[in-house]
Image (cartoon, rainbow, N blue to C red; front, top):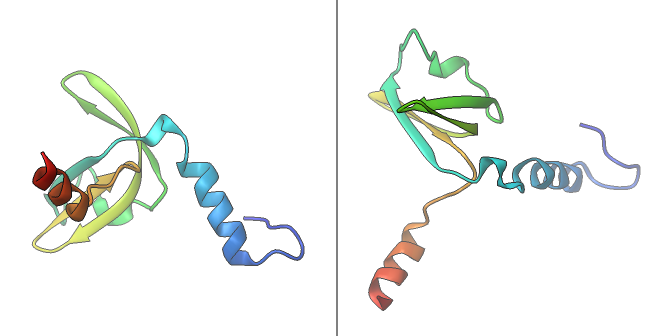
Length: 95
C-alpha cells in the first residue's frame, strides 16, 4: 500500500480499507464452519481480504474473507455486514 507523503500509515490504511470495503459488492454476511484440516477449503491458507465465490443452491455469491474463528472447528466469515448483538437486542425490545 502506498500513502501520500505527510500522511500517517494508519490514515492511509483506513482510507484503503474504506475504499475496498465500502462498496455494495461485499455487503453480505456468510459464515461457513468446517473441520480445521478441511482439505478442500484449507481454511488456514486463506488470507483476510481474499475474494471468493461462494456457491449455494446453484447461486454464486461474491464475497471477501473478513473473519476467522478457530476452535474445535474453523468458522470463516465473509462479507462486510456484521451482526451486532446490542443492536439486535435493542430492536427486539422496541418491536
